[in-house]
Image (cartoon, rainbow, N blue to C red):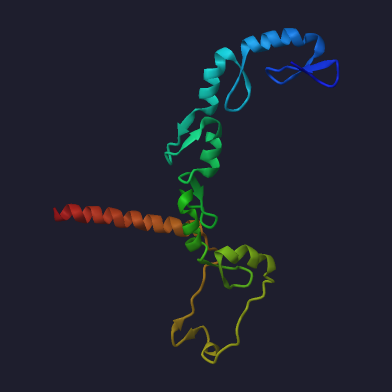
Length: 194
Protein backbone atom coordinates (compact mmCIF):
# COMPACT_ATOMS: atom_id res chain seq x y z
CA UNK A 1 0.00 0.00 0.00
CA UNK A 2 1.55 3.25 -1.13
CA UNK A 3 0.70 6.43 0.72
CA UNK A 4 -0.39 9.56 -1.13
CA UNK A 5 1.29 12.90 -0.43
CA UNK A 6 -1.65 13.95 1.73
CA UNK A 7 -1.79 12.01 5.04
CA UNK A 8 -5.62 11.92 5.00
CA UNK A 9 -5.82 9.61 1.96
CA UNK A 10 -3.93 6.60 0.68
CA UNK A 11 -3.86 4.68 -2.62
CA UNK A 12 -4.96 1.04 -2.54
CA UNK A 13 -2.19 -1.10 -4.06
CA UNK A 14 -4.76 -3.60 -5.39
CA UNK A 15 -7.25 -1.36 -7.20
CA UNK A 16 -5.29 1.95 -7.38
CA UNK A 17 -8.20 3.93 -5.92
CA UNK A 18 -7.68 6.78 -3.44
CA UNK A 19 -9.15 5.76 -0.08
CA UNK A 20 -9.38 7.72 3.19
CA UNK A 21 -6.36 6.74 5.29
CA UNK A 22 -8.50 5.66 8.22
CA UNK A 23 -10.29 3.04 6.03
CA UNK A 24 -7.36 1.76 3.95
CA UNK A 25 -6.76 -1.47 5.89
CA UNK A 26 -10.41 -2.50 5.85
CA UNK A 27 -10.75 -1.50 2.18
CA UNK A 28 -7.63 -3.44 1.15
CA UNK A 29 -8.80 -6.60 2.91
CA UNK A 30 -12.18 -6.45 1.16
CA UNK A 31 -10.77 -5.34 -2.21
CA UNK A 32 -8.04 -7.97 -2.48
CA UNK A 33 -10.43 -10.76 -1.44
CA UNK A 34 -13.40 -9.83 -3.68
CA UNK A 35 -12.15 -7.87 -6.70
CA UNK A 36 -10.03 -9.07 -9.63
CA UNK A 37 -8.36 -6.78 -12.16
CA UNK A 38 -9.35 -7.64 -15.76
CA UNK A 39 -6.18 -8.48 -17.69
CA UNK A 40 -7.55 -6.92 -20.86
CA UNK A 41 -9.16 -3.62 -19.83
CA UNK A 42 -7.84 -3.19 -16.28
CA UNK A 43 -11.30 -2.74 -14.74
CA UNK A 44 -11.87 -4.06 -11.25
CA UNK A 45 -14.54 -6.75 -11.41
CA UNK A 46 -16.02 -8.92 -8.64
CA UNK A 47 -14.14 -12.24 -8.75
CA UNK A 48 -17.23 -14.35 -9.31
CA UNK A 49 -18.25 -12.18 -12.31
CA UNK A 50 -14.89 -12.07 -14.11
CA UNK A 51 -15.90 -14.75 -16.65
CA UNK A 52 -19.21 -13.01 -17.29
CA UNK A 53 -17.32 -9.71 -17.71
CA UNK A 54 -14.99 -11.32 -20.25
CA UNK A 55 -17.81 -12.92 -22.25
CA UNK A 56 -19.96 -9.77 -22.19
CA UNK A 57 -17.20 -7.30 -23.00
CA UNK A 58 -14.11 -8.87 -24.53
CA UNK A 59 -15.19 -12.13 -26.19
CA UNK A 60 -15.13 -11.95 -29.96
CA UNK A 61 -18.33 -12.04 -31.99
CA UNK A 62 -18.62 -12.90 -35.66
CA UNK A 63 -20.41 -10.26 -37.75
CA UNK A 64 -23.28 -11.88 -39.62
CA UNK A 65 -22.80 -9.53 -42.60
CA UNK A 66 -19.04 -9.69 -43.25
CA UNK A 67 -17.95 -12.64 -41.03
CA UNK A 68 -15.26 -10.49 -39.39
CA UNK A 69 -14.61 -11.23 -35.72
CA UNK A 70 -14.93 -8.21 -33.46
CA UNK A 71 -14.81 -7.74 -29.67
CA UNK A 72 -18.36 -7.62 -28.32
CA UNK A 73 -17.61 -4.22 -26.81
CA UNK A 74 -16.89 -2.79 -30.29
CA UNK A 75 -19.54 -4.77 -32.18
CA UNK A 76 -22.20 -2.02 -32.31
CA UNK A 77 -19.63 0.45 -33.63
CA UNK A 78 -18.41 -2.08 -36.22
CA UNK A 79 -21.93 -2.80 -37.44
CA UNK A 80 -22.87 0.89 -37.62
CA UNK A 81 -19.66 2.38 -39.08
CA UNK A 82 -17.01 -0.08 -40.19
CA UNK A 83 -18.69 -3.20 -41.60
CA UNK A 84 -18.18 -3.18 -45.36
CA UNK A 85 -21.42 -5.10 -45.91
CA UNK A 86 -23.66 -2.75 -43.85
CA UNK A 87 -26.44 -1.16 -45.86
CA UNK A 88 -26.01 2.54 -46.64
CA UNK A 89 -27.90 4.89 -48.94
CA UNK A 90 -26.54 6.71 -51.95
CA UNK A 91 -26.26 10.49 -51.42
CA UNK A 92 -27.81 11.13 -54.83
CA UNK A 93 -30.62 8.59 -55.28
CA UNK A 94 -31.19 7.15 -51.75
CA UNK A 95 -30.72 3.64 -53.17
CA UNK A 96 -29.73 1.21 -50.37
CA UNK A 97 -26.58 -0.84 -51.07
CA UNK A 98 -23.60 -2.39 -49.23
CA UNK A 99 -21.01 0.15 -48.07
CA UNK A 100 -18.28 -1.63 -50.04
CA UNK A 101 -20.11 -0.73 -53.29
CA UNK A 102 -21.03 2.86 -52.34
CA UNK A 103 -18.01 4.67 -53.80
CA UNK A 104 -18.32 3.05 -57.23
CA UNK A 105 -22.10 3.56 -57.29
CA UNK A 106 -21.82 7.24 -56.33
CA UNK A 107 -19.18 7.84 -58.98
CA UNK A 108 -21.70 6.76 -61.62
CA UNK A 109 -24.82 8.12 -59.92
CA UNK A 110 -23.25 11.52 -59.21
CA UNK A 111 -22.31 11.87 -62.88
CA UNK A 112 -25.96 12.02 -63.91
CA UNK A 113 -27.42 15.42 -64.66
CA UNK A 114 -30.47 17.18 -63.32
CA UNK A 115 -32.24 20.29 -64.49
CA UNK A 116 -31.62 23.43 -62.44
CA UNK A 117 -35.02 25.08 -62.09
CA UNK A 118 -33.46 28.51 -61.68
CA UNK A 119 -31.31 28.76 -64.81
CA UNK A 120 -32.85 25.83 -66.77
CA UNK A 121 -29.42 24.22 -67.36
CA UNK A 122 -28.50 20.60 -66.76
CA UNK A 123 -25.99 20.25 -63.93
CA UNK A 124 -24.02 17.19 -62.76
CA UNK A 125 -25.60 15.92 -59.53
CA UNK A 126 -22.38 16.01 -57.51
CA UNK A 127 -22.06 19.72 -58.39
CA UNK A 128 -25.74 20.61 -57.96
CA UNK A 129 -25.49 21.90 -54.36
CA UNK A 130 -22.61 24.23 -55.24
CA UNK A 131 -24.37 25.29 -58.43
CA UNK A 132 -27.62 26.16 -56.64
CA UNK A 133 -25.76 28.23 -54.03
CA UNK A 134 -24.20 30.45 -56.71
CA UNK A 135 -26.87 30.26 -59.41
CA UNK A 136 -28.44 33.65 -60.03
CA UNK A 137 -31.46 32.23 -61.85
CA UNK A 138 -30.61 33.84 -65.17
CA UNK A 139 -30.87 31.32 -67.99
CA UNK A 140 -27.58 30.84 -69.76
CA UNK A 141 -28.86 31.08 -73.33
CA UNK A 142 -26.22 31.19 -76.06
CA UNK A 143 -26.63 33.48 -79.07
CA UNK A 144 -29.58 32.39 -81.18
CA UNK A 145 -28.75 30.68 -84.43
CA UNK A 146 -30.71 31.27 -87.62
CA UNK A 147 -32.18 27.79 -87.34
CA UNK A 148 -33.52 28.58 -83.86
CA UNK A 149 -35.06 31.80 -85.15
CA UNK A 150 -37.51 29.77 -87.26
CA UNK A 151 -39.58 29.04 -84.16
CA UNK A 152 -40.10 26.09 -81.89
CA UNK A 153 -40.67 23.68 -84.79
CA UNK A 154 -37.47 23.52 -86.82
CA UNK A 155 -36.31 21.05 -89.47
CA UNK A 156 -35.45 18.58 -86.70
CA UNK A 157 -38.94 18.44 -85.25
CA UNK A 158 -40.45 20.00 -82.14
CA UNK A 159 -38.19 21.22 -79.36
CA UNK A 160 -37.82 19.00 -76.37
CA UNK A 161 -39.87 20.15 -73.41
CA UNK A 162 -38.83 19.26 -69.90
CA UNK A 163 -41.31 18.41 -67.20
CA UNK A 164 -41.81 21.12 -64.62
CA UNK A 165 -41.08 18.62 -61.85
CA UNK A 166 -38.42 15.91 -62.18
CA UNK A 167 -38.08 13.36 -59.42
CA UNK A 168 -35.26 10.79 -59.27
CA UNK A 169 -37.50 8.61 -57.09
CA UNK A 170 -40.20 8.73 -59.77
CA UNK A 171 -37.66 7.66 -62.37
CA UNK A 172 -36.45 4.78 -60.21
CA UNK A 173 -40.05 3.72 -59.59
CA UNK A 174 -40.75 3.77 -63.34
CA UNK A 175 -37.66 1.69 -64.03
CA UNK A 176 -38.64 -0.80 -61.33
CA UNK A 177 -42.20 -1.16 -62.68
CA UNK A 178 -40.85 -1.64 -66.20
CA UNK A 179 -38.39 -4.26 -64.95
CA UNK A 180 -41.14 -6.18 -63.16
CA UNK A 181 -43.32 -6.05 -66.29
CA UNK A 182 -40.47 -7.39 -68.45
CA UNK A 183 -39.77 -10.14 -65.93
CA UNK A 184 -43.41 -11.21 -65.75
CA UNK A 185 -43.68 -11.11 -69.54
CA UNK A 186 -40.63 -13.34 -69.95
CA UNK A 187 -42.04 -15.81 -67.40
CA UNK A 188 -45.38 -16.05 -69.25
CA UNK A 189 -43.70 -16.38 -72.66
CA UNK A 190 -41.39 -19.07 -71.23
CA UNK A 191 -44.44 -21.06 -70.00
CA UNK A 192 -46.18 -20.84 -73.40
CA UNK A 193 -43.14 -22.29 -75.16
CA UNK A 194 -43.10 -25.35 -72.88
